[in-house]
Image (cartoon, rainbow, N blue to C red; front, side):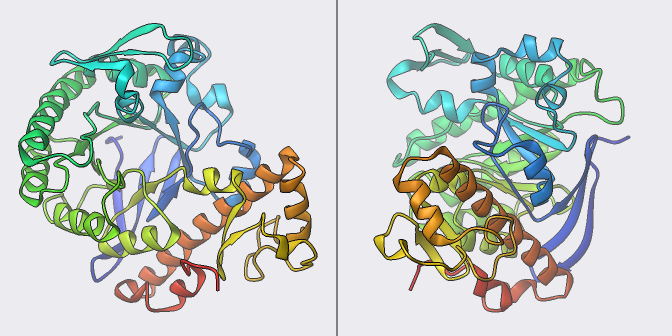
Length: 382
């Protein structure tokens, strides 16, 4: 079986609906991928994720390397078996987490020396080490190790960072090609390695990064280094520009985005895959995404509100609980508050992507944000 076949089912304007065939099942695109940093989407059991229709989730190489350790996960049969998840998994390279340590890491040509945020112990990640760990974890899709360029950065610094990412990408692919057979539980297909496009906020660097990364022949391509403080308009500009230089027959992934209205917009532009911690993180702070806009459940005006969190949502939270009850749970510090809020937010994100896919299949891809889909993703609460 060829690694990660990608099938286009429908196209409307720049938007397209397709299927990514992984060793652990098909993933319908465009897709939003919940983030399960340490082998768990925070507060949500795997059976609930299945009920919500999540077809692929993320694991984080940095965190799983530190705890419980990739060798332990390998010895227990890989991350799918360890966390009891039979659907598709993507593991990121750990690059973003390592580079976000700032004062705790030192970058060299060979790799990154960093100190654990847990106990201060010293560790060294090279491109080869990142791929080695990800092979051990056994995700269906794994990511090249890149340098996440800081923002803002001038053009000279951004080029230096991009060049390092390109050199590391070659090393990642060489190591992967030599060792990809070392995942025995992937009997139905190979792992797939994605390259990552960098280049900061400079269109010419984005183009060069894309063209040179594509020349290396990765299975899919991710656009990294966005949503790091730039304006939404600049993010959209960089995505649109970069997509022009990525193969149309391969999955295209924008990392670390965004609000519901943003992911719908990027899907309309032709992006297949997106992920973000926002729905789970916002839920833990009492912020719900609804068809009526963003709802801060901590607000006192919900204390006696007997309505559902979102009257247009059919998730198990909105079908059973009231805004008053969710507010009570949150203000009293009950752990159930974060769990229920998270289930709803994930349902909203996943439903948004299903609505976008449906619109594309109906030939309405170019009007996603002006048609019926937009009514479910209003950015602000009235």
